[in-house]
Structure formats: structure tokens, C-alpha cells
Image (cartoon, rainbow, N blue to C red; front, top):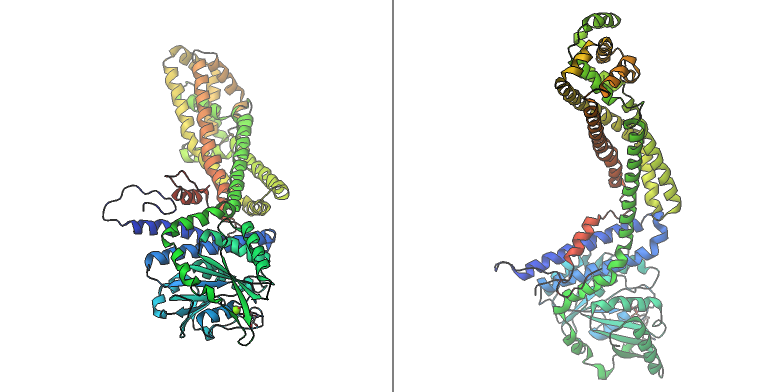
Length: 607
Ligand SMILES: Nc1nc2c(ncn2[C@@H]2O[C@H](COP(=O)(O)OP(=O)(O)O)[C@@H](O)[C@H]2O)c(=O)[nH]1
Ligand SMILES: [Mg+2]
């Protein structure tokens, strides 16, 4: 045995037991099934999800059945000598409890002419002791074992075990389960008990009466039991003389429509007026004992896999749809970020009148040159300033002032605002037109609530970026300065020009807070210096440096402001979706569980 549900496990150290590994892998799937069931239950209980209620309820039943059947597998693994379990199932009033009494040769099961009389699974120990059934409490989990007569009628999560004291001519030593019906309106309340008992059964006894055998609910259950591969018989109860052959033929036909496996043995039960009980036919006296030979516990892991496989896609359809919607959400965010960056490039980086960063680098460059005559100009400039130059030269203050007057920051904040408005519009459209409307609606409302906060945070990181980027501006100035030193002719002509002194004064005034960053672009002296340099021997080098500065700027803005900044904030809204309207099972979680269940040897996959 190297696999459970086809999980391929490579060679193991001798000390590790296969059974431990198998138990572990199964536990992983079991946990996932439980999680999925819980999510379905929560979603199903929300009024917003009324449209999916019926189909979701059906999946909950399938998940309960599968979870229980896997617990049965654990029971088989942990206590192989556990007593056999026989379960009687059938629609209301079919005579399940009456048959239980016949088989047990006693009156321990409550019989009533009222529908929904039996509402809890009731186990009767025939030839085994209650203490032999220790594993059952573990199997039933949150269901509590209680005494048969003490089980409250308003509580459905309990079961009973009772020792039957008479000898049964029909049953081997076992626990015989009488179950509630699964078809009455009330059965919604106690259905889980029926399903859990069905999954526990080693042998299934289906009881139908001539009135009920054709009901859809009966055949739904018969069909649901197929992947469990339990030896099965059908008891046809409340027969009247002459109807047996006709009814059996009809049963057979219905069976062939519902299931692919062989039609099981049918036991006709006639009523005995004197006792008021059905009569078990003499010829079938050993039938139940013989069925035991067909129990195949060894195949349990394969059957579990078959069961999971049967429903896997159905169960995960809404989970996968949610993944698609979430990836659409990510696509939406990527889309608005892309547009935002495009407008940053168009309206700032590549805009001839708006782009100020390189001008600032040139202004920095000018302050690095020792220009004669600047002192005189500066004295003039100083007069207009109200605070001491030395204080203003403090780098932090300088950068802050520059950030405050930056067109780039104003533009970036506008872009962020526009981006959120655009996103909100698309969410509104999606909530009206697309699948997963609830999800889009919820994203819309999350965005509305957090819009201001997201914008504030964006503004803070934009400012931080701008301050940090001053270092790149200074580096650019330094590169240009070094290049100029290699070109003494250019440097000298710069130093000799009167306009350079004016431009330096402007640069220093900028640093001292006398003018804003944007004024640089329009200052005539700065324009003159720019064209002077552009036409000089370092002109092409300047273009290269400017291009590199822009690239660096684009990369930094994209990453720190858009992708890591606003993009992450928007993606994080996903984690704030209500847990009661969404599955919240990540693609990674799903992939991890699916990968465990890929059958490598036979190339058989879950999906
Ligand atoms: N006519 C007739 N009535 C039966 C037969 N078996 C049970 N009943 C009656 O049908 C009713 C329901 O029986 P019960 O065993 O409680 O059905 P359950 O709901 O399937 O457990 C009771 O009134 C029984 O007496 C039968 O073989 N023939
Ligand atoms: Mg009953």
C-alpha cells in the first residue's frame, strides 16, 4: 500500500509505518472537506445567497456524507475489530422501525402511525456489547451518545446505543441502526443523523413501501449511496398479494436509471395482521449473514476517492468562480495602475513644461560650480528672504520645501484620486452586469469606506518618495559636474557668463524657499543655461543623464507608489471581504489539496 486516494509516496525510511502516512494524508483531505462544508453552511445561511440555497444544501449533504465516510475509514484503520454496522434507511412510514424490531426479534425500536416519529439514529447492539463500540463516539464527533429514552425531541445531534437482549435469527453479531426518514419536511432538521448513519453502515437495508418506492427523494438517496459500495438489499414493505412481481420489476428499472451496479436482492415483506409486523420470508433467513462476505473494508480508501471524485468539480465550482472574480479584481487594479502610470509619464515625465526634476538637478549643478560674482547677487537675494541662509541650507528643510512646491506631487495625488474614481465606477458596472455580483458590490462598499484613507496613505508615501529621490537628483548633479570638469572650455565659458550668476542665484533661492520648484522651468536665466549646456560639448551626455534620471524615477514611482503602495492597499481589500458571503479558499490552498490527490501511477486525476 503506497497510496491513499492515489497519493504517491516515494520510498520511506523503514521505521515509518505506511499506515501512519496514509492516515496523515487522509486527514489532510478530511480537513479540507470539513472546511468546505463549513463555508457552504455559512454561505447558505445568509439571506443574500437565497438564489443558491437549494443547490448549496445538496452539496452540504454530499459533503456531510463524504466527511462521514472518511471518518468511517479512520474507524476501520484504528479499530479493525470494530463490530459490523447495519443501517436501515428509507422514507417516512415505510416501516423502518417495524423492520428493525422484526430483525432484532424484539420491540426495542419505537413504531408509530405518526410520521417523523424516529428522529435520531438509534443503534441496537445485537450479540455485541456497548463497550465494544467505543470507536463510535469518535466517529459521530459532535453528536452525543445518549440513552434511547432520554434523547430530547428538540435536539438532533445525538444518537443512542441500546443492547438488544433477544436472539436474532437473521442478524450476525452487529449494531443494527434504525434511522429517521429523509423525505419529510421535518427531515431537514435531522437529516445529518441519517447521512452519518448511512456512511457508517457496512450493510445497507433500504426499506420502501409500495406507496413510497417511486419518490424522487428515495432514488436520490439510493443514487448517493452508490460510491460507498456497501452490500445492499431492498425491503419492499406493506405488500399486498399479487403486487410483488410488478413492483419488483419497476424497482429494477428505477435502479438501472439511478445506478450502474447490479440490482440488489429484493426482500418482499408481507404484513401479519395478528402481530402487526411485517414477516421476514423464511427463504431469506440467512440473507443478511451472507451479505457480510461482500464487505470490502480493504477497498475503503479507493471508495473514498471515488466519492470525492464524483462531487469534486460540483463542490468547487463556486470556489473556482470566486477565484476567477478575484483574478478579475486583480486585473482591474493592474489596469487602473497602468493607466495611472501612463498619465504620470504623459503629464509629467515626458511633458515639456511640467517636468521639473531634471531642472532641479541642473540647479543643484549650478550651486556646485564656483561662480565669481555670485556673492553679490546673493546679497541681493538674501535681502528678500526673512530667515538666515545657513538655517535654510539644512538639507531636510530644503527637501521639504521642494516637496511642498512640487508639481509632481500634486499630479501624483490627482492621479491616485482619479484612479480610485475609475475603479469605483467599474465596480458599480460589474455589480449590475456580471457574475459574482455580491462580490463586486462588496468591493465597491469597501472601497467607498476606505477611499480617503487610501488616498491619505498614498499622499504620505508620495511625499516620502519625493524626499528620498532628492538623493538621485543630487547624484545626477554630481555626474554632470564631473563631466563638466573634463570639459574646461565649457566650464570656463559657463563661469564667464553673467547669466550663470543669475541662474545660481535662482537655484539658491529655490533651496532657501524663496521660489517654488516649478518656477525653475520658467526662469529665463535657467532656460538660457539649459540651452547653453544642451548645445555644448556635454549636450548628448546631458540627454543621456536626463533619460536615465527619468527611467529611475519611473521605476521608483511605479514600484513604491503604485504597485507596492496603492496596488497593495487595493489588493488587501480582498482579505476584508465578509466571511459569510464568500468561500475564502485561496487557489494555493486548493492547489495544495488537489496535488495530494493526483494519482500518479495510473495517470488518474481528480480534475
Ligand atoms: N399495513 C402495514 N403497516 C405496517 C407495516 N409495517 C409497519 N406498518 C405500520 O406503518 C406505520 C409506520 O411504521 P414504522 O415502523 O414506525 O415506520 P418508519 O417511519 O419507517 O419507522 C406503523 O403504524 C406501523 O404499524 C406493514 O408491513 N404493513
Ligand atoms: Mg421509525
